[in-house]
Length: 420
Image (cartoon, rainbow, N blue to C red):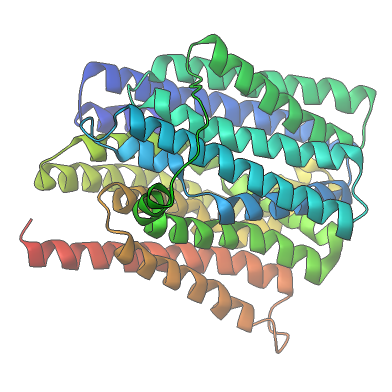
């Protein structure tokens, strides 16, 4: 609640009443979603084993990695386009590129599952659901340009809470890893239907794109695409590494700890990933844009530091008490991720700032620091100084601290040279 009020106060300095209201609703909606997810997860972990979560997490990570590698981040291109450039031809070009990348990525993942794994029908259904959701989330950008955050907040909160209720019903009556997959399928279907019902689904004719148009889109997206690949690879590779090095049980424990660690960012994600970049893209005065960015970082850093300290102090007694003894080994992993708890949202704000202001080369310095932090901590596991899962967890903390520090310093250095 405190974070929601803080974010509303910060947004109020940025722009119009509609933006303030919509932003506050999005954050409040995310807080409700996080609360519902946490409550339902308390039930799921009592019925399911770490291995169940591990299998689900590994398939989810592999599919997300592929979609991340193929996606040109059409939603970012749509959001940051000026009104003058966003004509009908541009809309059709972006819509067609989104359709093609979704089809290509889905074919790759389904073929991989069919040939190299013993995937079930439900697991293939999970991949298809991820593909449709990827298309829906990018398609939403056409609608989101007009900042209809009240409607989107109501829709997204209702869909997410409904999916958690469905999962609760299924785990009590069916059980097994199928519950996690069916929840994702329902979430995708309900999200798509809901967006269509509020008039937020954009449909256009898919047309043939010329080679010149392909080159134009890639030129616009190449920096964002490279950063997106690095980001997606980083997030998903930690889960995959946990599974490869420790098996499905360790992957499940790691997945659960990481899921808890990202709850603060889940609440703040509308600010960091949607409202802030939309405002950055509409604000032409560089000094005003930088001032707004810095106020946002400062306002969020205090509550995030408090949450980070609480994570270190209380993870060990609270996790096994809430989740049960079989999840006790997730507690030290969560404590080791405290740096991620604090700096993930702060880094995401700087990332979207760089995306919107087309300063991706500066952002890539932060990405390099992010990977260096993870690899550096993983090196401690080679001589046996840290267990592999603890090295991965600590690596997440060090990586986000390093990425934020390097990126902020680089931006400030550049801005001083430009005399902003």
